[in-house]
Image 1 (cartoon, helix red, strand yellow):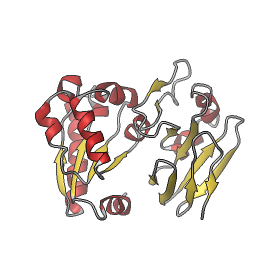
Image 2 (cartoon, helix red, strand yellow):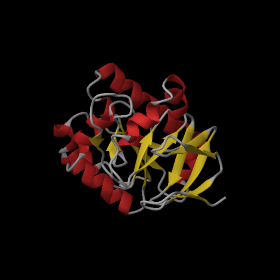
Image 3 (cartoon, helix red, strand yellow):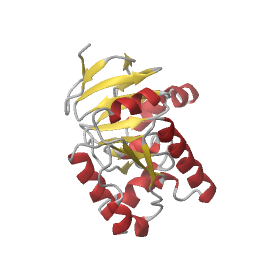
Image 4 (cartoon, one colour):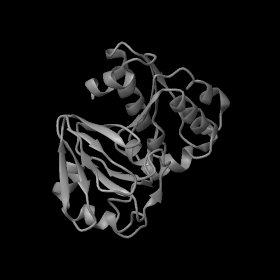
Length: 226
């Protein structure tokens, strides 16, 4: 994701704020793993690395932590539980600060759980018996399955079972590992080593290879632009 993050920071302040919130229930060792990973990654890029240890709603309401987000060129949400991430940040001081920074021009990105939580649906693609939980809906007309190549290889019926839990009018996108869908809210570019996928409710799919430009209008079939 080095080239992706360079692209996201181009023309923006070289300051990356990253939150391990999605791993907040997994213990200090896992949280520290995400914080160390982010710190080393952004320092290699020559970017000011700002780890923000927001692990629960009490942290997310702390004004001093929310204040750290101001001036970011990139805000990044890492992996763990997408439902926990969305429920922890929703309607808090930290989330309001993230939205303010994004509206002011900062890039907003997530991997794995972070990617799910930014859409309409916070996960629910691996569970067979529970309803999908609401996401933060920054991109309200999409839901995403991250690690798609890995999950689809293990369970080819995954996309179809997930489609039954996604609200009508919400499109479903699979994103392979080492790959990103960059842009929004309707125009995107596939970046990275593999592909992204448009997953239809009838079980069919379309592949978008790295370098593809895609128009994803609300409630409509996508259009490949290049």
